[in-house]
Amino acid sequence: MTVRRRSMTTSSLSTLACIAILLATPPSLTAQLPRSMSVPVVFGSPLPDDGLHTVLVRWYADAAGGLPLWQESLTTQIISGRCDLILGSTTPLPDTLLRSTPTYLGYSLDNEPERLPRTMIVPVASALTAAYAEVAARLDPRASGLVTSINELAGPVSIIGTGGVSIRRQGSALMITSATVAIESGSIRGDGRSSTYRVRPTTTLQSSRNVTFDVHSPTTHLLGQVRIDHDTNELVFSVSAPLLSDEEIHWSIIP
Image (cartoon, rainbow, N blue to C red; front, side, top):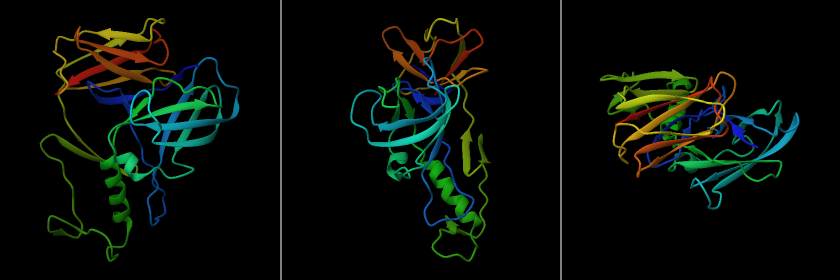
């Protein structure tokens, strides 16, 4: 069985692809912010029966092997192979786990062997900081125990991006992004048979550069990873199921 899920990723050339994390923040204020994330998952053929299933999610420090850093057993409703997992819903995810170096997720369905490949999760320190800022913004200005100044600026402070940096609010997160110009980019269209694709860019692949890629599919979500073949100077993309003719991998190499 395969796990199909779209993954929008930014990774070092020497690492696997990663997925984005959306931190869940409740509408009411609490003493401690929860640590949770929502992950949509599609289980491929053979499909599990519709109904309740147990999914064991493990966090690892490496893409393969090793002992889990954290694990959580979730009961979820699966319909046509699809479900949404709320990681951290039974026990909040440790703050140190989310702020650490990239970690990897492995899934096991109903005590079956773990699915491969594992999914890389990038650190979310900036998203956690934005979540705290969201709570502070909703509290009474006279509330104590909060940081109410930045670099000697007190009271309401506006954060404005310049020099190609943009700032926008997305739900409970403050998204800070900078414009980047790709050194080289391209796309790969599926052939209905292959789940591994190789690309040889004209750019020399170095460990100091980053590769971003996402898998475009009109009907489903795909899980993917990328590695570097330094001998041939090739990007090697692997997805959890063969790409159909209307599915593509879009990739870019950025400084």
